[in-house]
Length: 277
Image (cartoon, helix red, strand yellow):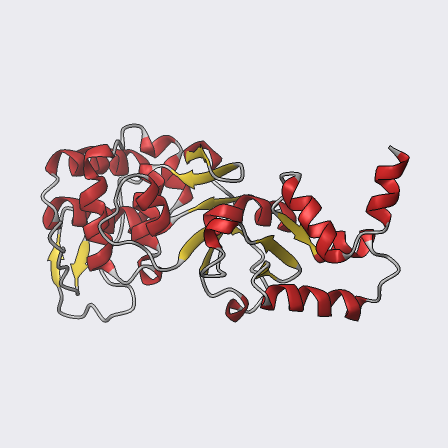
């Protein structure tokens, strides 16, 4: 035991990282390195981490947070966020869930494979420049709707992602992050057979806006022809808010003189085209 402890004391940073990797800990923070190598200056530590990153041994996933690149990702020198996202959010001490197109993909909607990785967490927003890791797309909420999250095993542990109904609402509410309403409608069509909005007025609706529900209902009924799902959604909407205002289908576009959908009270100021699946 003493011999092993002495061996740890005499390790280089590279050896410490290797020991951590084979011990089943694929990530670490700069703070952990500083604690282990308290005799090293901060500049020496950062120089060594930069060197190891340049050699494809480490992936700097976030400010002060590193991923040890496993063999299966060594060629590209980039580790997919699903590999480390749970450890990163633990490091940031924030709740989270995988959202938008990435959640839809996990749920089976793989028509359009996302190029970036969407993560929803709580305010305040991060001060870290997106250029540090442009594979991550952040959206923020006041609270995480934990009742509507699912979990699954990943290569390094457990990850959390939104269920079908929360994913559906997020895709409409944050459509600007996924490429617009036409892409949203395409994903909604793939998820439609799994949707169940019964009793949504009791809890789910408080995690979004009434206008989002209106837009979602219009898309389901008039664009996708999902009459039964739309009927359930409309019943729940009337239980939640029996009076609501007209809203534009596309939020960042004028809806003057737009055609009106009286059932969902949506001003149709945008044409939605669904891709063939």
